[in-house]
Length: 158
Image (tube, rainbow, N blue to C red; front, side, top):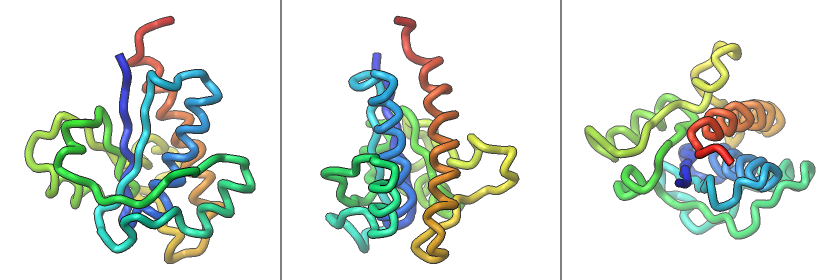
């Protein structure tokens, strides 16, 4: 059994690729490659085919986290059946995902910050507009740690 996660933000160049890269890094460190798969997408189509934003790449380089081969794509209806979990980076993206995927996709859909209720926030701020990639990285790193623990509980015991 494997488990699959799709992170989704607006353009798929800042928040969701950062979460994808951080989660892949954690999966690799824990030896869960092949058991947990991760991808990212955007609700919009403006950046399709482009690499992560320079601010995201700079931050990931600083932490030696690979984003090799990552290119922006738009979420599709098929994603609702292909993934176990779709994680929206903010409330508007969650609404757009639900509207696109329809009434009953196979995937569970959650907001990223539901993993961090102690933060008292609903939405991961978009660093494309705020410029604060460090703040987003802190949230993403902490949330991915909690998400991976949650996923690990769903995997067969080794």
